[in-house]
Image 1 (tube, each protein chain N blue to C red):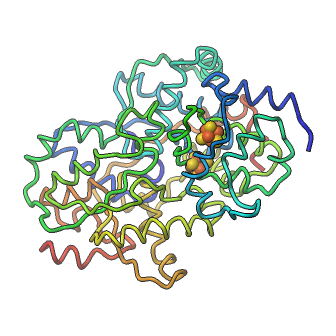
Image 2 (cartoon, rainbow over the protein chains, first blue to last red):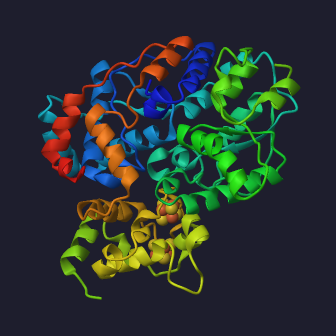
Image 3 (cartoon, chains in turn orange, red):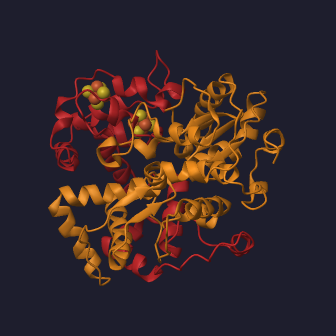
Length: 285
Length: 168
Ligand code: SF4
Ligand code: SF4
C-alpha cells in the first residue's frame, strides 16, 4: 500500500479509516520502503527527469515483491501511473531512466500495475455493500473526485475525465444521497494556492459557493491534497469573503468506516478542522 | 520580441504526442476551461494566466514572452489537466508546461514552495518528512510505523541527474 507523504506523515487518521475499511472488504495490503511518489504538481515541475526516475524507483520496489500498488492518494496514483505509461511508450526514456537506476542497483521492468483505492473499492462494490451495517440515510453528500483521479484520461483510465460517476456510486452504496452541484469537476486549487494564494482562494470560493448552493451536509473526497484544501482553508475563505461555509469534509473511507459501524473516535475524526459535530449527532453517532 | 529557434526545437522535441502542438489553432478552449484563467485573467487587458498564449509563444519560439515576463505566466498553472482533456487538437498542454516550468527552475524563477518541497525530498526522500508528533498519533490510531525509505538512493539520483544544483 502506498499511503503517500501527506496521509502517512500529516493526516494519518485517513490511513486508519482506510485500513479498517480494507479489512472489512477483504483487501490485503503490505508495507514497503517507498519514497515520495514524487508529487506530480510539485517535483515534476521542478525536474521532469528526477520525477520519472524516482517514480520508477518506487515501481521497482513493488516489482521486487511482485505486488501491484494500491494508492490512497490522487497525486501518487497520477505519478506512478504516469511514469508507468510514459516508460511503456518511450523506450529511449526507459533506457535513460534505467541508466540512472542502475547506479543504485535497480532496473525498471514494467511488470506491475498501479491502482487508485477508489477503483479497487468499486471493483469490490458487492463486498462493500454487505459490510455496511449502519446506512447513512438522509445524509446529503457533494462529491469531489479531484482532478488527478481521472485526468489525464490517457493514463488514469479510471472514470470519465469531465463527467465522473465512480465516487458517486461509492457514496450511494453507503445509503447517503448525492447532492449534485455545477462545479463538480472544478479543481480544488491546491497547487496554485501555494504560489498565488489570491487566485487559489478565488477558485475555492467558486467551488465552495457551488457546494453550498447544493444543500450538501458534507463534501466527500478521495485525495489528501483536496482534503486539506477544503478542511484547512475553509475558515480563512469564510473570513475573507465574509460568508459562513461550515461544510465538513470526509474521505470516502471515513464515510464508509462510519457506515460500517466504527465510531468517530476509532478513526480519529476529532483531528478534522471543520466541525463534524452536527452531522454526527444527526446520524446518531 | 525575438524568435529563438533552439528553444522552439526543444519545445517540439519535448512533446511526446509527436508534433501535435503545431496544430494549435488558437481556439482558446483551453483558456475557457482553465480555472486559473477564470479567476486571474483580465478580459480587456493582458494580465493574468493564459494557457493559450503559452502554447502560442512556445510554438513560435517567443522565449522572452515566457521567461522574462511575470512568473505568473508559467507558475499560475494549478496542474488540473483540464486543458489536456478539452483541447480539440489533443495537444497535451501540460507536457509543454512541465517543460517550461523545468526551464524556469533552471533560470532561478521557481516559486519558493517548489524549491522547499524539492529540498525536503532530496533531504528525506519524502515531501513531508516524518515528525515525532505524527509518529505518536499513528501509534494512538493503531497504525504501524512508516517503513523508512532509502534516502541515499534518492540523493544519488538527484546528484547524477544534476538537479541538486537548483536547490538553493
Ligand atoms: S484548446 Fe488546443 S487548439 Fe485550442 S487554443 Fe488551446 S492548445 Fe490551441
Ligand atoms: S492544467 Fe494548468 S493550464 Fe491546464 S487548465 Fe489546469 S490550471 Fe489551466
